[in-house]
Image 1 (cartoon, rainbow, N blue to C red):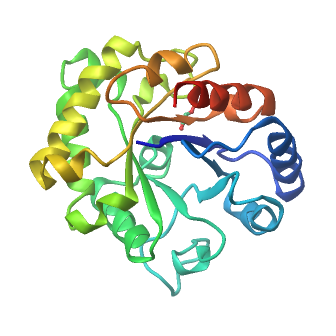
Image 2: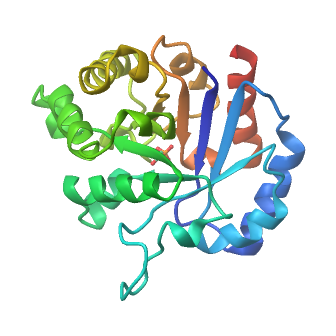
Image 3: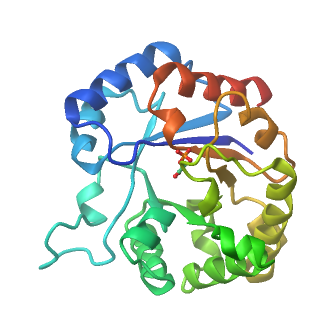
Amino acid sequence: MKRLIVANWKMHFGPSGASTLAEKLRAAVKTDPNVTVVLCPPSIDLLTLAKDVDQNQFSLGAQNIFYEDEGAFTGEISGPMLDGLARYVIVGHSERRHIFGEDDKMVAKKVAAVLRNQLKAILCVGEQLSEREGGVAEKVVTDQLTAALHGVGPDDLPNLAVAYEPVWAIGTGVAAKPDDVEPIMKTIMATLTRLYGEEAAAKVPLLYGGSVNQDDAKAYLDLPDVNGLLVGGASLVAETFAAIVKTAQSLA
Ligand code: PGA
């Protein structure tokens, strides 16, 4: 399976800063048919980057979407608006869940909106520290995944990737140990298999995210069930992100 390396720039850079970073990445990252690189800037930068970026080199993604296509929803951006600007959308990121109060039902509606608009969903799931310490990490992830995929049919699976992002590892510098990641990936794959069958499930890329850096990227990509990475902080610096992409390319 093609590896998928996703940069989540979060709320960093306006259009000119985003252009500058994309330009540095253009020079630093080689195109490789075995590795898809997705840049997810703030939505306000997508128009600029869609013009600047060679989409054979980088795909573009949005960090969020609203679940209705049009209407009186102040401040929101819909699937049809992303037409021609983004191919991927991150859905259910823990910052959306915990800072903006998105619950499983809303995440499910957003996944449906992404798929209905012929975009690709990068669905994030992950437990909080207290849940891990309480021994319920696998249950939390399974419940989040099952709820988010309510209404997703087997035909939609080619447009789905699942990112396991333990909340306690995001932006903390405390990445999850590969040994702790692998059982959760197996749980995710088992859930997808239960819902859609083995053949369809096996085609869904599974990503790890949470304090990934250039030194530990390989350890996650070496795990049998991991097909890619969702990178936050380390994607804000061209050299670091390019090094992570290079690592993926060297394994592909
Ligand atoms: P981080 O963020 O790499 O800064 O931990 C990852 C994410 O939130 O997607």
